[in-house]
Image (cartoon, rainbow, N blue to C red):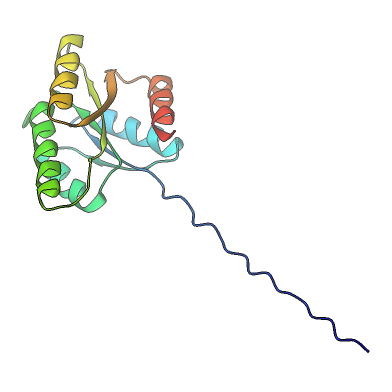
Amino acid sequence: MALTEKKTEKKVAASEPAVPRLLVVDADRASRALAVDVADSCGFDAQAAHDPAQFQSIYQDFAPDIVMLDLSMAEIGGVELLRILADDIAGKQQRGIRDSGPRILLFSTSDQRLLELAFDLGRAFGLMIAGVITKPIRTADLQVRLRGLLR
């Protein structure tokens, strides 16, 4: 009787791709909730911050891939948060850490000129500005934009 040798094939599970992280920064509760819900439905792990202090804390711990930033917050404007993001990335790069930072999606109820100005300023700071959205946020528009960022 011949012995048959069974080869066992090790199945190496491909590591699951990381779920992209999105941080919504907006003082308006309804807009934050809508953006988080839409992001979740698009496959993001989404968190939200309602003010600049909370933003900085969550940003450091959560390390988002994308930041959705309202430009018209009362305490500190979104433009100032763009500067803070740029300073953070520059500081990491000076310490030899390769980090180009998150992609940033700007939104505001303000006029289109403010969005365009912030877009240009963010780029001048060396940030990856992914686009702009006007408020009120339309669910379908946000879904299209976020799904495009997943590619």
